[in-house]
Image (cartoon, rainbow, N blue to C red; front, side, top):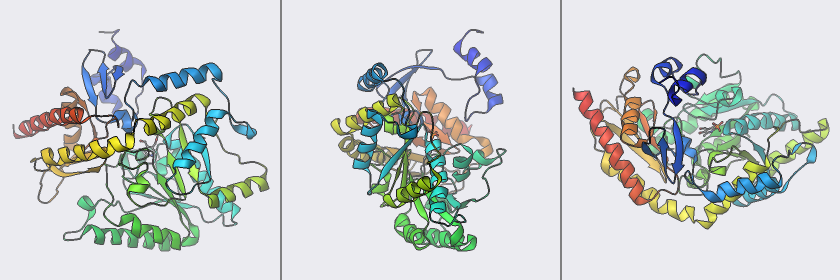
Length: 454
Ligand code: PLP
């Protein structure tokens, strides 16, 4: 079918996060429309979008209030910029709304277009801040193994996932990584979560001391690590690492790109895990992902540093043509209003535990499942070849991606991160839709178990 969508895609498109050779044979799933938590492909098959796309379409795929907000703004002022002290109302209103909702007192908001750009901007802000303080050598940045902060050269350097580094010549010099706080995978035999958290904090301190505290500027952390495999921090983790960072004046950047806007059952993941960031980045659910926009919130100490340095040099020489673009900003304002009006927080606090309970009840004892984890409306199952020893399957067998394909055939789009299958549905999902999602996914899991026995 040379003129089919699939054939045209194969001929023309280079896809992110795809085996480009295999794609030439297999081709894409072409999605043509969405309604609520569901999307349809060009053959008419419907799926529950259990990942809200990429952890992002928080209000589902057909919210007309967001459409109307975009159209109204397009009619009024379809573009303006924010360079050289120009501004516009959607940018101002969105900045005010974010400051009013921040998990800790924040001073100012900078806008970009994606999570990667937000984190990349923070790298430069942190360096700028330390230049302002007369300590240009305090420059190194700490990420965590399995952390994900984006794909620009700097944000990929913060990321701690091998496939984001290999062959791209990142991480850049000065980007270092500390332990992944995943108790199930990296805790030692008999080590409690608390003891493991203590070890993570000790390792962080050792790293800072080995590098020289006068050279370490900031650490990035997602409240729950998403793309690394929905890794929930062990009890007392943030309680223990934050004093270490404060001791050496290392700024803490909370990457709320996935966890922000109720995903974990609180407005911010920082509230769920007691994080008090100096800087916060967010994107995705900021605009329900209907249009691209991201934000960086900085506290007053950081802002004062940036302000002084910009005054000394003559300008804050950073920003994007589309920083705070009025159309995505207007959609984001409407999104934040909808979260309040629809009571999305109360809804997630009701259906989140329902999904978590459903995941555990149905899958924790399954022969292929090693761990079930998550909180609120973000969860995952991790497959294991040996339940008792946690021994993983050989990644070359691609068991996780096989399960994701089976799940898709059963009408549920999940996502495999190696052998972790994630669930991060639109926040509007109902209990009945959660049951349908887990029933259909369970069928795929049983099919996989049967196939592996053949
Ligand atoms: N930070 C986190 C925690 C993410 O999950 C992502 C994307 O998934 C990013 C940053 C990068 O965002 P983007 O893909 O919008 O550049």
